[in-house]
Image 1: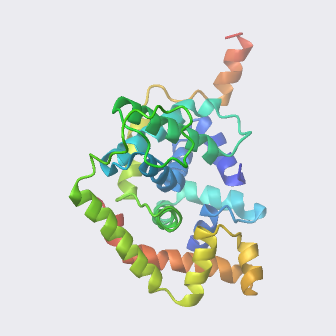
Image 2: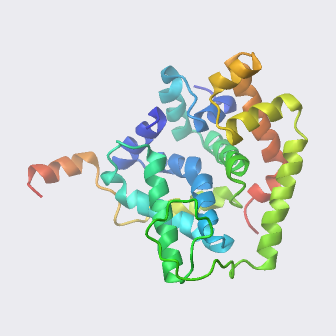
Image 3: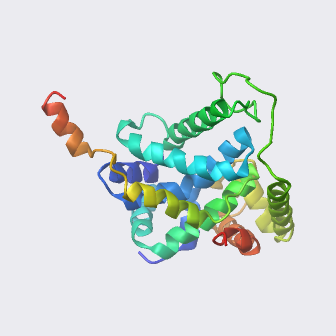
Amino acid sequence: MGDSDHILVDRAVKGDQKAFEVLVRQYQGKVAAVIARLIGDSDRVRDLTQETFIKAYRALHSFRGDAAFYTWLYRIATNTAKNHLIASHRAPLDNDVEMDDVDQVAPQLRDNDTPEKIVLQDELLKNFELALAALPESMKTVIVLRDVHGHSYEEIARLLQCPIGTVRSRIYRARQEIANRLKHYLRPVS
Amino acid sequence: MSCNPELVSAFLDNELDSVIVGAVTEHLLSCDDCVQTMTRLAAVKAVMSDKFMVHDPEGLTLSVMNVVTNDRTAPPSNGMMSFLKKLGI
């Protein structure tokens, strides 16, 4: 487990809810993405992401720290999605995700994804692609190396022959630029 | 420690030096601006790596924390667990 996760989990177990909130903020996007890949129902993704974190909070005292916190959370998220699929008699959309004991109970359906929701996700991804394309090449390279290819800052610095501080700064500025262009989607739902 | 969004971004990547990770974590626990920055940057990180983004991530966090705050099945603290073990429960 990363040092920060360790600190935050320890504090949350001792009753510091702000520490748990930081974990929620840190991981809710990744958890939602895992659930979305499995169920494809964008309305339920939000509910099931919330359910995942509530289950995690209630079980936090049983987390022993021998695996990464996110690995533990990921398992809760896939089980939550699995239970949802079983309850609604559907099969997971993404067979690559570990779902070894899910019955293939129905054809792969996206019956709850209305055209409006699909258009909204498509529109978001289109705007994201535009935001990424609009970045200066130096920023685009580092953020793709980090978030798409998973390279460490040190590896990126070595590949691009620049200081780690420059890598860190470009990654932050790239994310901030994209966030500014996607601010419509980051605002409260009206 | 003052606000430093670059360090918040590096925090999300688990790329902070061990000497400052504690200070940044403590800062996040006490600075609303920085945790909101972290939420936005984490949403961008998710869309970069997973091509999915939660709409209104701030609202989702607040929904979770609203339930957690009012949760009657809150996790017992380490101290409580030790106490129960001592009692053989």
